[in-house]
Image 1 (cartoon, rainbow, N blue to C red):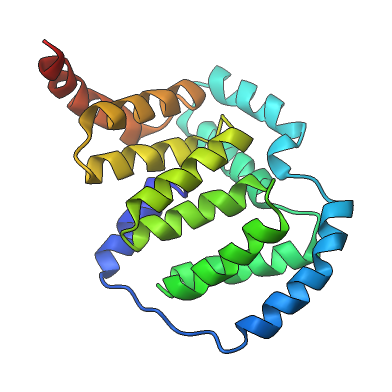
Image 2: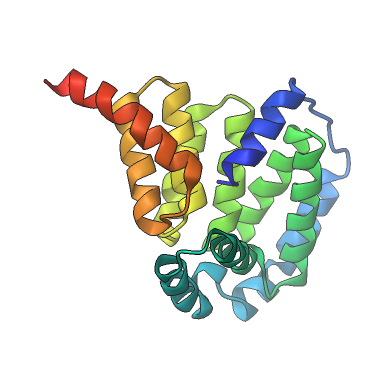
Amino acid sequence: MTPHRRFRLAERRGGFYHRPMRCLPQLFGLLLALAITWTNGARADQNDPRLDGLFVELHETDNPHKARLIERSIWGVWLASKSPTLELLMGRVVKAMGTQKFGEALALLNTIVTIAPDYAEGWNKRATVYFLMGQYQQSIADVERTLDLEPRHFGALSGLGLIYNRLKQDADALDAYERALKVNPHLGHAEKEVERLSPKVKGKNI
């Protein structure tokens, strides 16, 4: 999922606005026609070889500012695509999410995961939209698909913790946040949640 800050921003804005997209049937047809170009030409960006080095740097640095820059680079690799069609679609998704047009974003993401099922960030973004729409089980399913493709996706793991918090499943939330910190030890929100949840979960297990 996208970072915790985006979740909170969306929650503060309040309410959800769904606008029907009359052009979606035509757009979907066009995208399916272009899908062969995507499947033949591009690979899922979570497999980009640059990520290994970035994660090594992320674990080695003690500098918070440098950690933020490395995180930003990782997000950039995850989001980037060799497919102009996918780049266009993801740009529209981000814009729709930013203006709370979650129905529009969801329709676009349904197309993305259809034409590029091995693109982890498509599933992650759809998980985010499902969360913002209150559809938590669908969000969890898409988070799990994201993690199947990119086990190091600390955004998805943090998002999973947030979902389980919302569902009041403390043990599952704690597990998700701990997994996120193993991948990225610089997640301040995850650290706070581990500190908050650990006594509650340990108490339940006694």
